Image 1 (cartoon, rainbow, N blue to C red):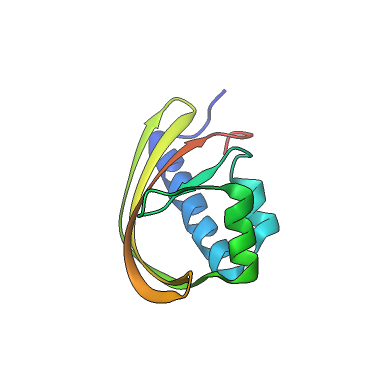
Image 2 (image 1 turned 30 degrees about the horizontal axis):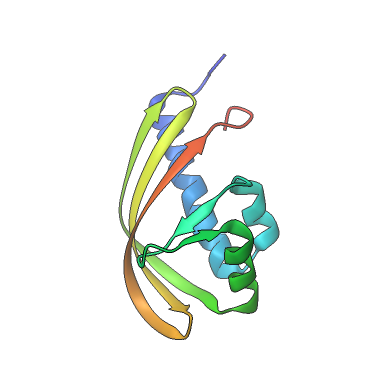
Length: 116
């Protein structure tokens, strides 16, 4: 039985996406791996679709170094045990040698695990 309401589900989605961003800044690959699916890919603003293992390696080596972020806006759509998250951030990061405050929009598909 699903005991959470849609607003509670939306709050959980936003919380997990914020946690993922915080873990990126902390370079905590082990905890990030608990959140993202084994088939996760990151599509960059260049269009490059980066496999999870490669992204994690880039974070570990600091060729992708995340310093902080400012959340600009979020939206969540819930459909049963699935959710679509769209977030807009200003991400302070050095990506492949270029540090900037990147204006990014991310779109993520999420699913419930153990009612979370």
